[in-house]
Image 1 (cartoon, rainbow, N blue to C red):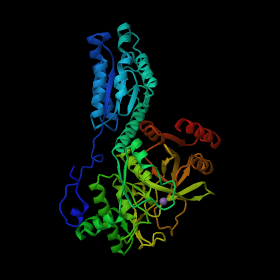
Image 2 (cartoon, rainbow, N blue to C red):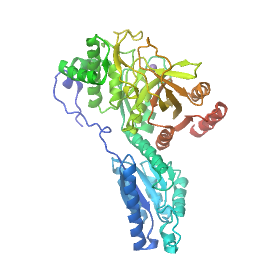
Image 3 (cartoon, rainbow, N blue to C red):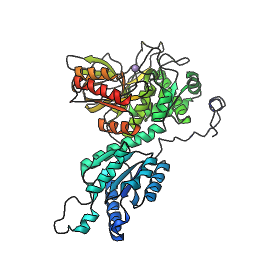
Length: 507
Ligand code: MN
């Protein structure tokens, strides 16, 4: 592939064609496959197909991604061919199977052995109730999922295939909710497998939890994690024109309250934003990191610039934290179209008297979680030794959310999810010059913190109002990584045992 070179682009000012943004633009769908066999005759099979299409048409009205009907499977060859089609379709984010009749499972072995996509077994039935007058042996032959799906379930378990099982009538809302969450997790998995992460410089010196095995991460999660020297970014920044900055400043004026006279400082953040976005687009990266320890040639730590890029869907991790950057992007893509918001986050300080955590970062909190219109302010930053940076200041909204941390346990990844209740910050904190969120961690501050620390959870997290533990559990199952959940029922003593068992399983 002919890739554009930085020097040509930024020094020569040559027009280059951006490489394709593989994940951002993709429209995902799911393949619905009905299991059956030839035993019942043409007429029954026709009815199975008709009913399956009716189910698919209904699901298309209520689910967040399109469902494509893959057909009624009668033979092993059909199944293997259909799964092969799903595997090779880059828009297919997963398969959904349902056995309207009995579908002998040895027919499925070769197909399922080759399956590379997320898998959901929908255990439903065309009719919700038993029609008293209509039921006879023909009816019994047609509506067999109660035993057909048990045969189908056995082979999945026998083959140890991680899959989501959803039982219930296909018109029921809780069935749609479960499928929707799994679909979002599956899209997250597709995004993960194609994700490229740009590191501007290395991790913060001496920090342990932001480190990790990048080769292992790529093998397991698909992430391409690579580093670009900060000099590339500085070159890119120097090539940004005043009119490019003017255009972004107009957006700032529309979207935010500009509470500073220091417009040049704000314009400098616009320059950083445009330059970083160009480099990310050029390399098809969905996430990036930087660190205050490596800003050579830059006048300000990107604050507003990073907040803006997160708002546009890029993942960000401070201090070189590429795992949190990646998870921020993945969760943003998973929850696209949802109203809540998702941000890079850090547990900062406690109100132990009130049992609350104050979350923030030195600058970089995503405005998608803001309660009101964010303000652009300029304040000195004690860390990093650069000029006072412009940043967005706001309060996070109230609502149910999760904090997510992915850690490298050495040889494996552990995904930790903490349920939280975000509240309106209890104090105005007029001298705190950064965006802030306040939450109550469940079951309470002390037990949640004991469990989080026991599990090795990082100080950096992804805070999401849209994703929940079930979605992340589905994601972990698809990616085949360990999942740990701290919630309203968690007790530290039992949790410690759970971690010990988990350590044995995943070692
Ligand atoms: Mn940090």
